[in-house]
Length: 329
Image (cartoon, rainbow, N blue to C red):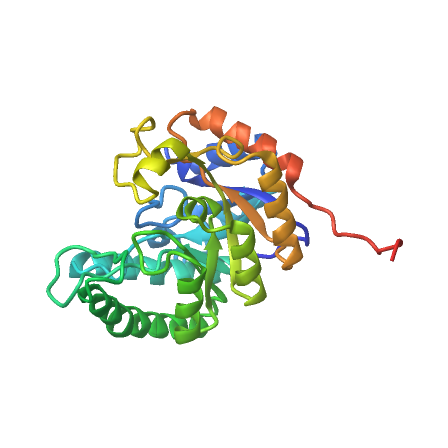
């Protein structure tokens, strides 16, 4: 599925998981949103787009695509965020199978992008839980990282990049997310270089901001590498008082807003509008003309109000028309 050049405003529809497909699409279209990102299983669920029901069924696929197109919408991506490297074989197998079914469904639907996580293994064969390494010393941690990358992630994703290539899927977009091996631009590009050009990024600025990464610089690095495949619009509030005391690595529950160093917020309630204007400009500078997909994870705002506020900000800052001739230069 292709869309006209010029950025579009989208939404990750998992926030409307309680609504049937057509009611969800009506709600989205009524807000002036132009694109939907549909969950297909694993952590996002598959309420609106279940590969087990849709794969190979042209009639059901046509009904889905017609429901989307009839409301003037497009599908920006299918999303199956999970952990196919999980040390629990049952979890890994389930998440792997969902990813592969999602990839095949994307091609059948004419969608060129699948969003997911890179995954995170345990610390060695026989581990029970994932182990995300956050420091280089004691040296045990570097040994763990070496094993995770060279024995798990690179072999797995090399095979999956080849699968995507053979299937006809062009963009496998990792959401760089702490807790997984791919969590910043460097790790996106490391896995891409090792495993294949089908791998790139679903850039979510909120995950970069709390780590101290500048999303504008990240956009430049990923865009210039040809690795910027999809973009989320989610904000984060940085509580500087708590950061000064405890830093940014925070394991307290997301509901503890007063105590946390950072919290996800609706667009405009973490960073100011100037940031979002700069972010959109950076995306245009590197040639990104896809969708800015709102992801609502704000516990201080209802779905309706939080999404509405995000739409309001982003409608003001998005650049949708193509630039004209530089008559002044």
